[in-house]
Length: 147
Image 1 (cartoon, rainbow, N blue to C red):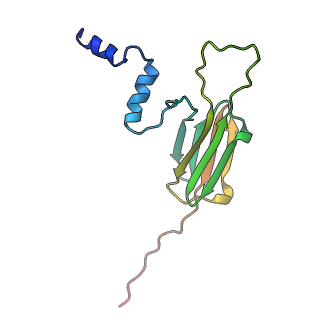
Image 2 (image 1 turned 120 degrees about the vertical axis):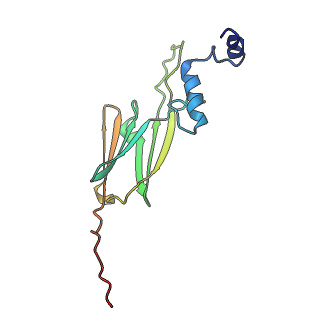
Image 3 (image 1 turned 90 degrees about the horizontal axis):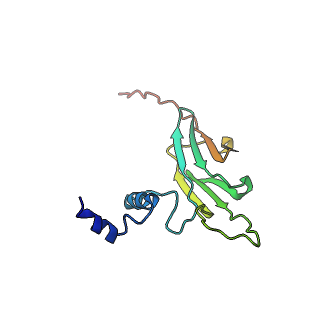
């Protein structure tokens, strides 16, 4: 075990925060992380489906409703927004700056057709919820083969 410590120090694994270690792990799989390398804001999204709707939830604390843009076109749902840096006071000096800011954009291909006219979006306690009602599909019909 002691033989591993110099190697770990050499690669910087012991000197970097755990968040960086786990972010690098998830990046290897191509999964988004909460903080990217340049510390820009990337919100977490959940996409779920019920019998009647597709539901998309995003954690976007600190973003005002006016700074969120939602569009739906050709089965693609796009959510864009921007978390703006708070105004800095003239005599304010930061000792630590860990919160992230910036613009984001995520696009999701919807798994089913949705009724564009009935899409609803709500924002409460920093969580954006977009409800996309499914279009009722025609019932399958048995076709008789005639001779």
